[in-house]
Amino acid sequence: MACHIAAAAGGLGARRYVKGMTKAQRTSINNGVWMCYTHGKLVDTDEHRFTIPMLKKWRKFAEFRAKCRQEYGADKPLPQEKLLQIGFADHALQIKSLGDETQTIGNATQDSCVSVIWGKELCHAVRDVLVEIVRNTFIHGKAKKCLILIRNRSIHVTDDGSDFNWLKLHSNKAGRGGAAAVRHIIEQFGDRLVLGSKRHKDENRTIIALAHTLDDIALVSPCSVEVEEEEWETIRKRRQIPASWFSSKTEPCKIFYIVLPEFMPHSDAILLSEALQPEAIKDKQIVFVTKNTSTGVRSYLLHVFPFARVLNISNP
Image (cartoon, rainbow, N blue to C red):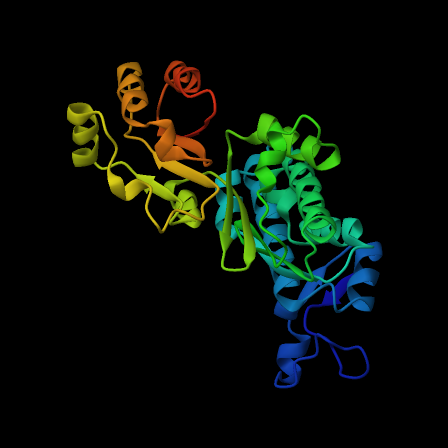
């Protein structure tokens, strides 16, 4: 069935009615999207959940899928690089209490096309973690509100609960549901995800993104640093890291990303271990970002730094 993106007429409940649209714009094919009857009915009856930008993004995905099927055949997977360029359908979810958070967060990840871009399994794992973060912040952190923003290619969570680092649940042997969800996402997808956690003033701030390019690492700035050539020379000669890596700006960061030089060999991992002392790291989780590095070097980094995580980004 054909559905209007901006409502065809005003009236009670017509949240998607745009007053300034002309009749020609309202009846134009550009203001329509093809839906199955089930979802077409949902879209027409729940204008709070399904917004104009969301439906426009759905249409963009549908047109892209149709184009790919015409060019490559229906059995070929959609190219993720192109899907990432389209980005999520923006969604803002304000949660003020527990009760229907599972359904609400589940709908938000589906409606925002997270499963289309990241794949169903990763989407499900992210949804599970989001539910556990929200429950922890209300039950244990005594939060009064929590905001989940899904936009472009990342997911952001902000809450006003007490200081809490949800990533520590991964190593919590006594943990239950939340620990299991965090352990699963890190063990299954940790080499692909940018996970940010920091305390800012009276808020906990979380970010989840897919590590596709170095621009994705920049999403967690200032909790990241890219090692410049002159800095690497300092590490080689003096066996010490630059003081700027861990400063007052990075103090609130629960996770710290170190972008290493491209094609890094095994011997440089040893130099890094001699320079990066435990007292500099404090209680931060370190994530090494490697570019076009062999599996052998990545495994060796984890051997030298058993407490760390490794992300590998390869040039196309």
